[in-house]
Amino acid sequence: MRIIGKGFSAGKKLFSMLNIPYPSKCTYRQHEIKLLHAASQAANNSMLESAKSIAEYSNECGVCVDGTWQKRGYSSLNGCVSTISVDSGKILDIEVLSQYCRVCTKTEKTSGFSKKCVVSHFCKNHKGSASNMETVGVYRIFERSEANRSLRYTSYYGDGDSKAFNNVKDIYGYDSVVKYECIGHVQKRVGSRLRKLKKSTKGLGGKGKLTDKFIDTLQNCFGIAIRSNVGNLSNMQTAVIAAFFHCCSTDKKPMHGQCPSGSDTWCKYQKAKQEGKLYKHRTASLPNTILNTVKTTYMDLCDQSLLENVYTERPKMPMKVLMVFCGA
Image (cartoon, rainbow, N blue to C red):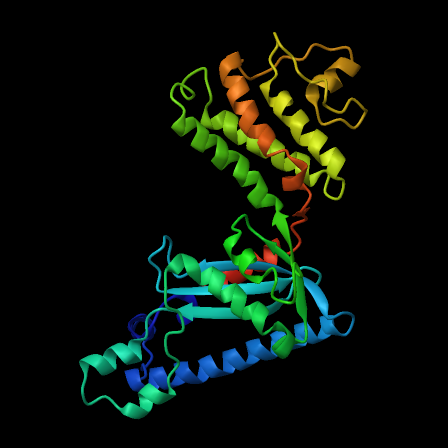
């Protein structure tokens, strides 16, 4: 029941509907605790086996790092940070953080509550904001990696948030951990940066100007250009720049000079040109003032220093499954 976010009350209702005698609350809780210990032990053994299989070949590896919270926003009392091997796609370690303890709260309210329970329970292990949980969790995982997993996580694959990375980049020595960026996060950065520009600049948005539809198109083309050239920085930069001019092209002003012109080109204008056909653009032209404003922001994101650490998305699916299981 806990896996689907339900407890004793929901279980009681389910048993009643199925005409099955339901256990008492005390018995239900005892079974929950037994399952918790069994699941924790199985998970820990699985993570140890995953780490052991990697350590047989090398004591250094790359990990995909991400955090999740019990609820959206920055008011969550519970959070979880996980590390997944980039090579095997298996979970290597997790850290659960909590700012709230039910046992301690109950002890404060009930004077006759057993002192033994207070000593034996797992208390809250985080003090601070919910947004800081990921930073703290990542540090704890990296700090114990050598002692508990016999591994060094020297390659950090994460999102655009640099706080967590800055906290661990020197954990094994000066600049011992290198950060790589997720394609999805780099792609989203284009959309968020342009939407922020649209909101802050008067007269930039509106009909015949910069629209959300155009931003989405530009963001998608940026992502396609990166995915098509992972591992080749020069071609990647050329492709993302070509994607901008491709999206801004119109019948009156075609700007496909940087688009690939070979037989396997993705540019429909170049294909039509090779076949001797006339290509009609579907997008309306943007005023030059708006085009230049957007171009400046977009080109900042095409810098080689931002693109050189982009990596493929191999751990994406295992990470998604884990986040859903944790309740994200």
